[in-house]
Length: 173
Image (cartoon, rainbow, N blue to C red; front, side):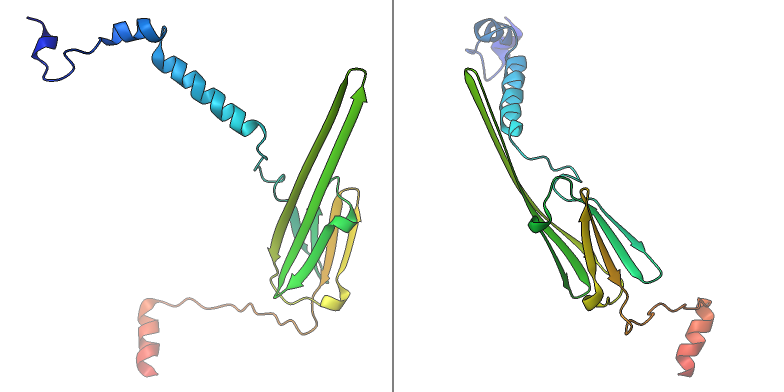
């Protein structure tokens, strides 16, 4: 009597060694290769999602007069860039369309790519909207956002006290 004959299920099934002979040398390795091939085919045309590709890199720095925002937008035209200022939030939006066509003896290549982005930058204080300046040079968009004369300094220092002192102040009031 074999151990296999004692099992309540799978007595009439082929052993795994017989299956590998019928299906190839390694069923799982073959399945793994096929799944890899499917994912490679799917991802070949997918857009990259790395930072800097789907969303432009932005540097924000404070100057004596306000804020300066610089965004890397290589290969774009200024007409394809839209800048808006809403509720102390700067929005930079753009659309890029590129076409490449080559034709040589016996073959022709035509490639097209499209993409758009939206980058929002929250501003720490109100800016003078009438004096905002945006320039675009050599792939870098620079936006100067002067601080509004009505913007107040809202930072104040809060003293840290011991817990007993705080409880005494609460009881006194």
